[in-house]
Amino acid sequence: MERRTLILEAAAREFERVGWSATTIAAVARGAGVSQGALHFHFPTKLSLALGVIDEQNVRTFDVVRLADASPLHALLRASHGIAEMLLDDPVVSAGIRLSLERGEFGAATAAFYEQWIGGISDLFRLALAAGELRTDLTAEQLGATVVPMFTGVHLVSAVRTGRQDLFPALESMWRLVLAGIVDPRHRERLLGVVADLFGTP
Image (cartoon, rainbow, N blue to C red; front, side, top):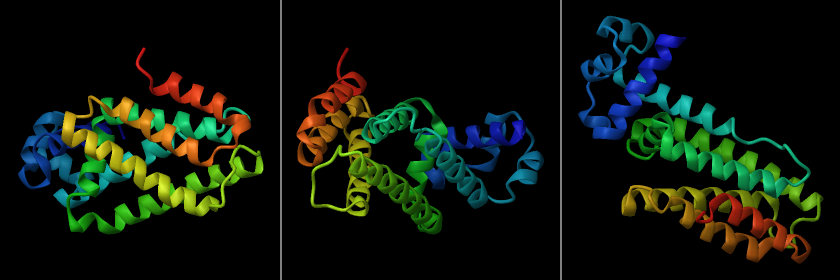
C-alpha cells in the first residue's frame, strides 16, 4: 500500500504539471522511485492510474466532512475550508479534480463523485433545516445540487485566474452570498463569523 501511495502521488504531480496527454508512465515511475514493472503491477495502464488518482482524491475529500459540533452549517463551512486547503497543498486532490474535468474516459467516475458529494451535502442541509439554521423555500436536495457546483466553479476559476492564490477570499465571498440568502437571521451573525474566521485575511 505504501508503494501504491507513492505511485499515486507521483502520478498526481505529473498530471498536475503537464496534464493527462503529456504524462508518461516512465516519468511517473521515476517520480515514485520504482520500476515501470512495479508501477504496472499496481496500475496496468495510464487510464487505470488516472482513475486511481481520482478515486484517492474522492477518499481524501470525503474524509474532511465531520459533524464535530451541534451546527450542521458550521460543519459544512469547515469541510469546505478543509477541501480548499487540500486543493492548495495536496497534489492528489488538485490533480484528481483536474483529471475528472479533462477527459471523457473519466466521466463515469466523475459523475459518481459528484452524486456522492451532492448527496452528502444535501444531508448536511437537511440537518441544518431540522436544527432551525435555515430559512428558505429550497429543499435540502436543491441546496446541495446548487452549492456543490458553486464551490467547484469558484475553485476552478481561481485556479485559472490566479493559480488559486485568491481561493480563500473567493470562497469567503461565495459563502457570504449563500448564507445571506438562506440562513435564519438568528444564526446569521454567528455563521458569518465562522466564514470570516475560516476564509478571511488574517
